[in-house]
Amino acid sequence: MARFLTIDDLDFSGKTVILRPDFNVPIDPGTGEILDDSRIREHAETIRELAAKDAKIVILAHQGRPGEREYLESLRKHAERLSKILGFKVGYVDDLVGDAALEAISKLEPGGVLLLKNVRSHPDEGREAPPEEHARSEIVSKLSRVADVFVLDGFSVAHRSHASVVGFAYTLPSCAGRVMERELKALDRILEKPEKPFVCILGGAKSEKSTGMIDYFLGKGLADHILTGGLIGQLLLLASGLDLGSVNIKVLEKRGFLKFRDEAVGILRRYDGMVKMPIDVAVDMDGRRVEIPIEDLPSEYPIMDIGCRTIEMYKQTISNAKSILVSGPLGVYEDERFIEGTSEIYRAVASSGAYRVGGGGDTVAALERLGLRDRFSYVSLAGGAFIEYISGGRLPGVEALELAYGRVKRIRRSK
Ligand code: 3PG
Image (cartoon, rainbow, N blue to C red; front, top):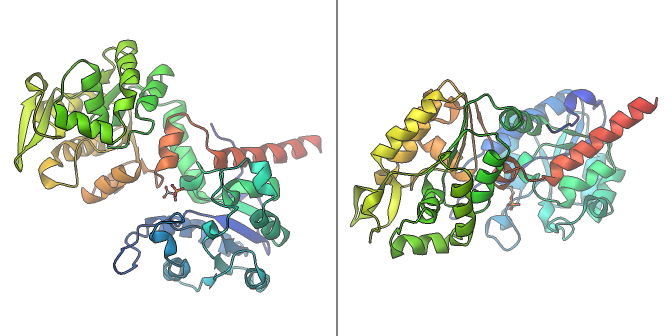
């Protein structure tokens, strides 16, 4: 269980606060318009609360990665959107640690909000480095001199050991914002002591951590069943000795799954019966959805979804669950012909009485598309950080908050 201070633990009145949310949002490549402002909306809650406490709020955020098209978009756009959401003006300065930024910070009034230039425009930021080193970086040292408190609200950037994420916890009293607090509490609830039976539904097309996640959940005795679809489901079928057909094996290779074949074989050996694989699949047969039992594999057609018999089998397991974690869609949900597996399984989860949590970019997009987002107990805003955290990985941002917590506890004890 992560231990950290929250906004309730520190004094903000008249204080200058460095706030690190995650304003990295999808942007229309044609018009440059923000396509989905969910992240900005969520962080607005923290900002509103800090403003009501008379803090002077300086926001450090990023958009895209250097070299990407989205990185070129100015954060002025984000400041404008945030102003609309908050109902009052948020300032923007196209500078990070120079005179213009420092002057704008010095002019902030209590309750005022200022967004600085994309923090990734500074070479200190994008480098993965130890927190102690980042604490000495230009971004952290210059801004710490003019600030009193640091609030880390971007759980979805906490897997990055970047200056704006980990450096300030060494130089300023630091706490979690409301988004960070909510994310950690919701995920810890399911990861620490999940109500049993705990069912984990894994799918999607990202190979990162897919086998590691299964190992973590079953090796720690957390999950009782893992239901698989998407490419991890196919990898496990392959590992069980089935030939999927060259077209499908090529996809597994291209998406980076094939290199985990030995791990998948080991998982099936170690956790016999706990990891469920599809018993039938839907293939794209010249534009038509055709379902075939796995006994009929290999197929010369691409596998795009789980089949009806698998859906029924998975629904049985879901109906008995008390906790459910969903990471990744079960098939190619972007295509109406192959959304059925994801739609049926997500709906079964949404209607279950279990504590139900979802996360990861594709999961959230699929939940949105199906109109189910509000029917989950909790949906994480994070992509990579969510996967890292639920696979038992370390999040440098969370460790930085724990360090700040430990420091305060030590001081309080010694008084
Ligand atoms: C995200 O969108 O997941 C976060 O903003 C992290 O972005 P990154 O993967 O570019 O660090």
